[in-house]
Length: 191
Image (cartoon, rainbow, N blue to C red; front, side):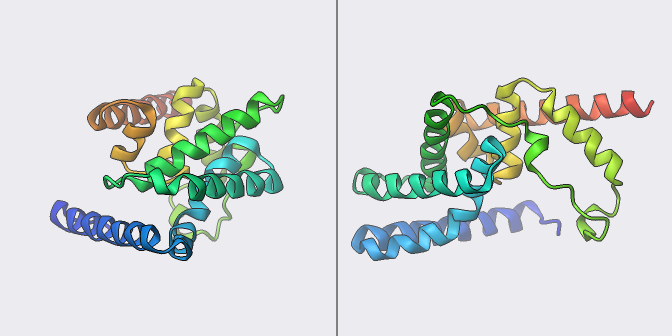
């Protein structure tokens, strides 16, 4: 579904309001933290799975992220970016995991190829999807991380900027440059 700028702004505002309410409720009652958990658990899990490639390890790390978030929640100052705060914790948990002599799994190894029945992928054939994934795996790790944050974790540019330590416009430009570079590579390959 395509949204106009006004519709998109309204939808983002509604989501931000819902997140703000969940955070405020959780500040008042720790039991209400479960709503934040329910809202973000799948995104965090997929993000970590894209790094570790093992479902049980991704589940363990996901649990660690939420336990850590709950422990630190009293110090959290809500400024409209709870997801960015949560993903920074997830990123630190993954880095700690990696430092313990685990190796990172290539991005293409952990994402199942969609079936031909997937209506969102009617325009793509499986070979084209494999080619795109191979191209993404050739990117520097920093660029792969931006792709993970945007398309696996489904974060907006403001959240990506907070995690990456840059301005929102910079995060947006970097992601679009990566996508343009991938598009060029695809054009060359299909020459």
